[in-house]
Structures are given as C-alpha cells and as structure tokens.
Length: 317
Image 1 (cartoon, one colour):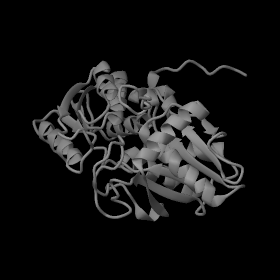
Image 2 (spheres, one colour; image 1 turned 180 degrees about the horizontal axis):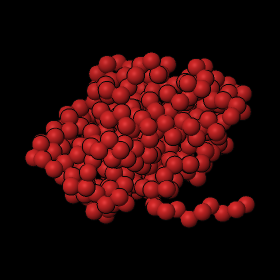
Image 3 (cartoon, helix red, strand yellow; image 1 turned 120 degrees about the vertical axis):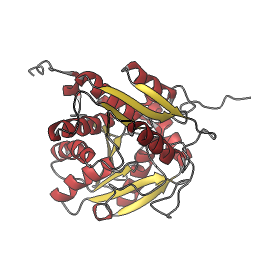
Image 4 (cartoon, rainbow, N blue to C red; image 1 turned 45 degrees about the vertical axis):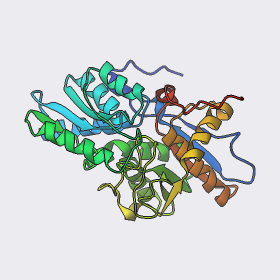
C-alpha cells in the first residue's frame, strides 16, 4: 500500500475518520452497532470539521478578514477546534467559555493562543441560563468592534463541515445504514449528517438524542446536566424536524457507565456525549434485531475528561 502524501497543513488532517464495530457490548440477537471515531481529528473532536467550514466559508464570502478577531461562545470543544483552525490560518481567536466545562478544554484553547473569557457557573452544571449568558457575553465583546462572530448555534456553515461525516459514512457503508443516532447541541452534526443520509435513502431512520434531565426535544422543557456539548437549554435554530424521525432522552448516569464500558470492553476512550450516543445505539440495536445496522459517532476523545470523575470508580470502604 502506498503511504499517503505529506499534508500541506495540519488542517488537512481533519476528517476521513475510521468506523469500528462494537463486539463485546452487543449480543447475537441485536443489530450491528458501528461507531465513527471522531477523536481521530486533530483536536480530538468532530468540531474540527465545523470550525474549518465556518472559517473557510466566511473567508470565501469576504466576511472574515485578517484585521478581525474570531470570537465564539463555547463549551470547549468548538473553542478548541476554532483555536486550532485560527492558529493554523493566522487569525486571532477569543473564546467565551465557562468553568462548568472540562479544564482540559479550557487549557487546550489557551495552548493554541486563544484569549479566554470564563463565565462562572454557580452550580458547576450546564444550566438553562448558562449558554444564553455565554452568548450574551460574546455579543457584548463583539459589539466593541473588530470581531467576526462565528455564532455556532445560528451558523449554517457548520452543516457543510458536518456533511463530510455523512459522505464518509456512505462510502463506509455502501449497503446502507438502517439507523443513525446522535446527540443534539447546536444540532449541526445531526442535521449535516441527516441531510446527506436522507438524500441517499429516505428509509434511513434518524434519531435525535438528549440528556434525560434536560428533555427539551422530548418533553419541551430544559434542565440541568453535565454532558458537555449538548442540551443547550432551548431548541437550536439549525434543528429541522423534517430531518429526524424520533427524539430520545438518555439518562446521564447510563451515558457515563457506557463510557467506562467502552473503555474497558471495547478499548474505546470517549467522552460523555459519546457514551450517550452509544447507549442509545445499543438500545436501538436491541429493538431492531439481527441483520440491521445502527451507526453513531464518538464525538471526541475521552482524554479530555481525565481530570473529572468520568472514569473514576468508587473505592471499596
């Protein structure tokens, strides 16, 4: 096999991520479950795809120029991805985040040279008020002038980046996908993938996911949770009800247990939103039965969560 040619930029390493089949968490009476490992992207997250699309589409429109600083409100993964893309392209980046999110993510943004404004979360949780407050802080800073707001929740350019996952899945599953499921934050990933999969086959079932303690999609009200990157507390503007068939709420404790099981039984170190995705995929696989294919994504690497209690087990007293 001929080795790949050297990349001209670190940005060329975004995308073309592998898919693996779960072997030990599934059973013989369930559908096959496949996980696309987005932690293989440069910052360990599928947000690299979104960040690159938001920056390059703005460049092409002339909306982003060298004299502007990119600014974004972020739970950390989007900020890390934008900080990476901006560093590679030579832009200044200002992130508005919170101490509710993993310290590793905040430090990653700083490592890429980002300026960071941290909004305090009194509860330490992702509350219904937190994301709107971060959005407001970012808008206030941007109003001073000299900024380009990527505004991920409203930015349809993200769909272009996430569509890449859908196109890759079509190539990786030429015989088709029965169900694709994914958690909703900005909804960019689910909508970008769903648009591609539905265009290829209307029979592909798309399932939107959220934390059970913040059941905006399933019950119509927000709540507190600690699954970073999803459950923003309101219906995101990019979410198109015509592109998904069902919404499900998954218990956060189950998502965390699934993370530990993925590490110990499948050798996959992933974050909490990924655990939530896989927990739902396993449920769907049991419902569908043998001969079907369920696909989801591991949003990022679990290396970002080693400083919190995600992989900590209680010690015996």
